[in-house]
Image (cartoon, rainbow, N blue to C red; front, side, top):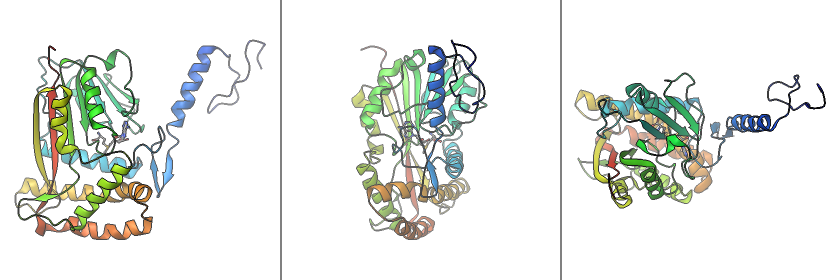
Length: 333
Ligand SMILES: C[S@@+](CC[C@H](N)C(=O)[O-])C[C@H]1O[C@@H](n2cnc3c(N)ncnc32)[C@H](O)[C@@H]1O
């Protein structure tokens, strides 16, 4: 103890120095303890999962997942022709406030902050897996998108709100879209870029008992039980319109699931996408199937053998749909 007005109050990582106790210190201390707890990842199935609001999201957040997200982002950039958005944003009239909900590794947010250096960009996520060295106009916040969004100036009158590959994260997509609407400025844009959780083919219908389709059906059922519905992606456009958005556009990309296409570009995309799906299968399956379908982990692993084979089967000429839906909040009314 230094004197009567200060006493020992253990600091994380430094137990030796006495500190003066003030209310400000207490708030700062609590904030630091909370900040440290977001790194106390939950470990299960040989993977780690987010700690903040633990159990909300069923995909891991470890290095394997970070690499998978990077690979997925690379494929996305190729089929979007290097574009970060389809909404009509312009450098002449740049957005001032941008929010990327569920930013993951933050790559999109970093590139967006570089593209619009005068904008304030925020990327949110449950997991602190974003890099520290980022453009000065970008910050990351740990936040649960399923709960009341944050207050603060940067969270209102937003010019552009973005979601990329957030399927299985939200309990109520309609609420997410309405909340985004309420946080945009009149004339601001919401854009969702999401994968549909099924495969299709223009060659011949893929039977429902195809192992990959069965896997997607299981994923859909498990996600529904976990209150994270994933079968809403084809309905996004309607949900935008119901929420009050105008000028709503929907563009659907067909992503080959392996290297079956003849064309060089699509073949490359297909090979990359097959690799991404392969990498993602265990992470997608373990927590959802074990917790919500009560399938033992050994059985999950065995079933994935068939799913991998179906994924590599070029004869089905299968693709997965990727939806980009964007709409504008009306200027008046
Ligand atoms: C498939 S990743 C996509 C990340 C990033 N948008 C990208 O495309 O690389 C989904 C992300 O959603 C985050 N997430 C899941 N539930 C969330 C929630 N309730 N609030 C905020 N982020 C959430 C996960 O932590 C994960 O980083």
